[in-house]
Every structure is written in structure tokens, then in C-alpha cells.
Amino acid sequence: MINGLPYRQVGLDTMRPGGLVCVADHASNHVPEGIELGIDRSLLGNHIAVDIGVEGVADRLARSHGIPAHIATVSRLVCDFHRTEDDPAAVPTTSDGHLIPGNIGADVEERLDLFHRPYHDALAAFIAETRPRMIIALHSFTPRLATSDEARPWEVSLLYNQDDTAARHAIRLFGEQGLTVGDNQPYSGKQLNATMDRHAEAQNIPYCTVEMRQDQIDTKAGQARWAVMLADVLGRVALEV
Image 1 (cartoon, one colour):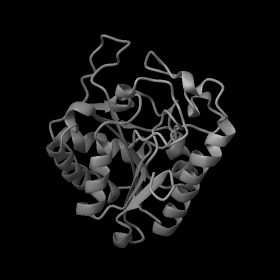
Image 2: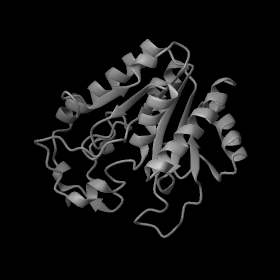
Image 3: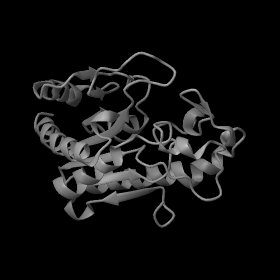
């Protein structure tokens, strides 16, 4: 956390109405002092704690491509910003087969007050100030889950709930890059789209929720490559929505 806040904002000096902005709900594996999750610390480098590679991509979009970013600074194991407040997984007790014993019986209301509400209040203000033409929500997914032997072939996927307008353009354009592109895979935005439901669909703002496979962005070179591609492809999408 920076200055006690569960988020940081990068590239504010490049903000201009009608541009693009980026949101990264799962960018950090930080566990604030005083919170004991009761897990092996090695799991904090695992996908259950953080969307591997996303922070680097979001930073590059903001610093090198003029796309301001709102980036989480708290692990989703502490509080999952990509869940509604009433979702039991907002403070998860299990993840991909791992028990999170420190969250069993946790004061959920306190976690929401400390982390979830300040994060989303600040994101709402960020969007109101920037008045973006389109929002980019960044996530990453594992090549396979620990609880499954099934490989995930998609290098990138677009998720959406009711509004698939921008996603349709993005799926086509990423496909033209020679990529294997998922359509609401490996997760469906019909079931999990909380942040964009609240800050994009409810506000009638076009958005692209981009899921990158983690082996594409687990190095600095991969993050730089994807930041360039995202800025190009999604910049073109924004002109079409």
C-alpha cells in the first residue's frame, strides 16, 4: 500500500477527457501489516494472490503510452476488488484448492471499509475526472489451474457481461495479430464482471476486460510487448465504439 491507500494511480499528468484509462484490480500481492492469512508465504507469488504480470503492463501503459492507470496495491487474498461487497469471495477462504485459514471468521465489514470501499470510491472519482472514451480492465490467467489438467490455449481473452460492443472489435483485432483469442474464456463476464458492471456498464462507458495468459507477461520483455500491442489494438477499438 502507498500512503495507506489500497490503490495507486499512475499517469495522471497525461489525463485528458475522452481518452483511455486502465484498471488493474489484482495487480498486487501485498498483505498489509496486521493481517495474517495463515498461508505459506510462497503462495504470495502464486496466481491466487496476484494477477502475475499485470502490474508491469499497467505501469507501461500509463508511463509509456499515455493511458492513466488505477492499480490495486493489496492482494485479492486480503480483499478482492473484483467482487461485489456481498460476495463471500470478497474475502476468500479458499482459492484454487488452497485454504486461506486466516480469512475464516475475518471481520469482512472491516476489510470492506479499509480496502474495498476506498478503492472503488477512488476509481469512481478517477473515471468521473478523466471521462474516458473507453475503460481497459487488465487481468491475467494461468496456463492451467492447479485443480485441473486441462490446458488453456488462449493467449488473450476478452470478457464481457451485457455490453460486448468493444469486446467484439477487440477479439477481431487481436485475432488479426495471429493470436488465439478467447471469447468469455476461461472465465465468463456473465458471472464475474463486478468492477466493469459498476464503473463501465452502469455508466454506459465502453470497456474491454482483457485477460492475458500469464506466460505471455511474466517477464519485463513480455510486459513491454503486450503494453505496445494493447495500446495499439485497444486504441483502434476505442475509435470504433
